[in-house]
Length: 354
Ligand SMILES: [Zn+2]
Image: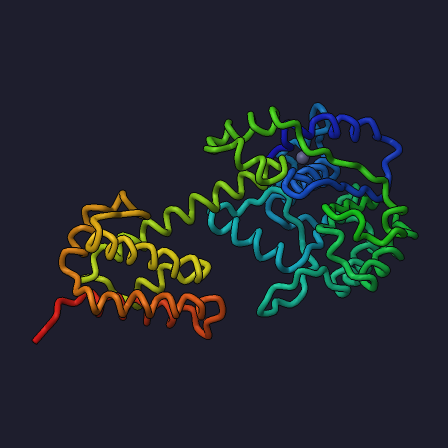
């Protein structure tokens, strides 16, 4: 892990603070520009026992290794459950156990729907951490993000700690909604505005990561390069999922509705129904008018299916699908819902029997 190219200036500025380091730093700026990565990198550097040039963490000392493993005794990360869940998922998906910047966490109990708030008990749990002597005799670092995820009570609990900061402690707060922080918290922190990078810099970075349509994505995300990268990855994932689903539809004889529903279980239901609907329109459109509007790349299979389908039955299915699409926003059970649609699809394509 490293900071992003557009953060070098701020990094240099922080290195100039040596000796008169603020006990609380608040990083704020637009969402999707890498503020948290920067703060984690800074935490690692503050804890490193053998910093190298430019104040970067060495990556080799015990402290750096502990931070990487998420087990540094003088580092705490306080974040909302929803962020925790999202980052955990990213780590699992990338198969990367080393999230570079891990800390022992003061996590809340896991609930069904991850909370978007930092809970007061997470902040209260810091008290005992702050009262102990540091394990390594160096600094102690607390990283809180997103800092605006604290309600008034939680923020006030933190404020007490900021007002009487323990020795050798640095608080790092990160937010993309500065105005949602209590003024008293803001005034206790040294604020650092993190600018959205210049378009050319952001584009160069996206292109170095092989992001297609970088210009469009960047514009859509208000110039935030990480948000643009995220959108590109999501878009690619969805494209792949849709192709898998269409290939299943292309072979109704072997289509297993239960398994097929499983493959799209994580995708927004109206999207899935939309894919099915367009596929069915293409089959019917080809049969009635020789036209394929949505999925021309599957024209060969669509032609075969459309030649065999029974028009009246298939029309009924199209009607059913339009009616069900309205329900798709709020189904009781998304998986069963897709299963039943796919069963109806298979039935509609079944050759008429005596
Ligand atoms: Zn180190």
